[in-house]
Image 1: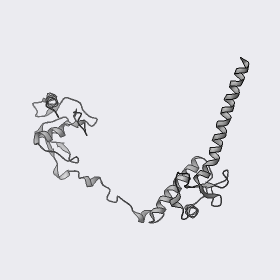
Image 2: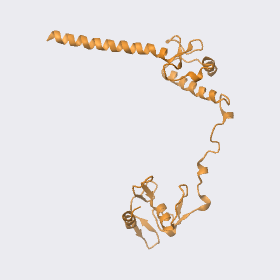
Image 3: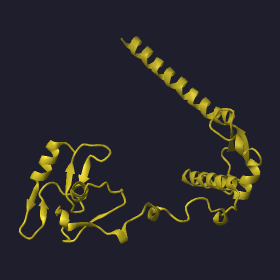
Image 4: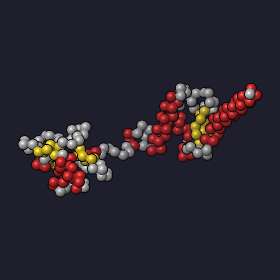
Length: 214
């Protein structure tokens, strides 16, 4: 905070006979005074917290909360501010003690590849439901279809994708097969090319009709 900002800060403090030093500037949604400094990484500061650090010449860790003896959230009297040392919120309080992989709780066992495949299977099933495509595959079917080829999946033309032998049929074990992504996309690309050709032909015919009419 610059000397000019500090002067502005102090000009927004009103001292009451009751002892509270009332902040007359901006107040945040939680009822605490706030002050804009423009400094990174926090351009807006909580005034009671900053004033405590300034008057006590300390730098508080982010998880230390500054409390009010008076219970007045817009009070910045240094004598009314304190740190409740027995209730300091440590960073570890925010950490889930069970954070990280818990294979014993995975639905498909401790194999991380099976967990990844199960998530993919669930997404595929949800997408088929959204597209109203009958889906009768089980996760065991999904495992058997992919076999040892799971690492070859992807979005490049040389990667493997799962598709239906009969595009109009249901998603079943017998109607599902792995194909190269390039082959899987070819029918859609052909349809797109045909649609583009038809559109250009219609535009050409329209121009010819307008030309002959003139």
